[in-house]
Amino acid sequence: MVKDGVGLICLGQILTNICQFTIASNISGFFIYTENATNAAASLPLVICAIGGLSGSFGAAFFVQRFKKCKIPSLVSAFVALTGSVLIFFRWRYVYLRWEVIYTLLLCIGLGGTSSSQYIALASRSAGKSASIITSYHVCQQIGTIIGNAYPAGLLLKLFRGHLLESFGDGPQAQKAIQRLLENSRFAATLPAAMQGIVRSAFLKSFPVVPGKHIIIKLSFLEYSALTI
Image 1 (cartoon, helix red, strand yellow):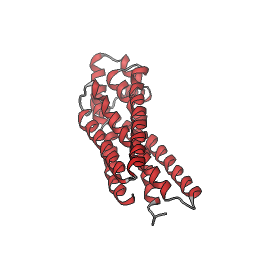
Image 2 (tube, helix red, strand yellow):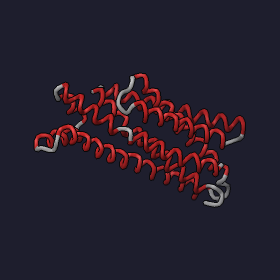
Image 3 (spheres, one colour):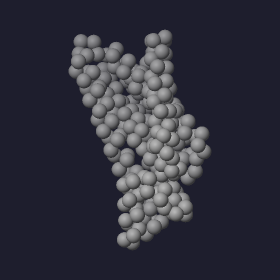
């Protein structure tokens, strides 16, 4: 599997799914903590992500069918996802404009195209041993999903708690309020306006870990992608 590039493709699926579920599991919380968005408004980026993923998948599949090449759509998709990550990282750190939610579309178009082109590349290498290869592929997807849902969210909350402690102090009442903020994103809306601003600022300072992880992962993925197709 390593010799014919299948192992690297499976590794790429771990990285791609980490990226996908890192953003999916944290993006709604971003808009709740920073904008006190309603559930419907906070779920809008997830709809945009789904549209982007489908568009990227279909676009990459069409290119491969038309030109019989997997490397180009794989690399282009990785660059598109990286561009979306960089824009989120630099634009959402302290302040952002609402139309900039479109950056999530770029990110997910890239992730969808990456996943699609890599799956096609895998299929071309699976003759005679498709069952074991496809099983490994889907296991790697699940590993990436688990990591993407768990690790970045925990790290984000840890950083968020640290920034809240810097602002509110570590007294008993502050500790209680911070714990409620971490457990219930809607609790911030019950605080005075000045404290809501502090919470918003603390979350904005913490959130770059999410696209930051994307950037690191996608840079690694770009190198592996160039070697496998």
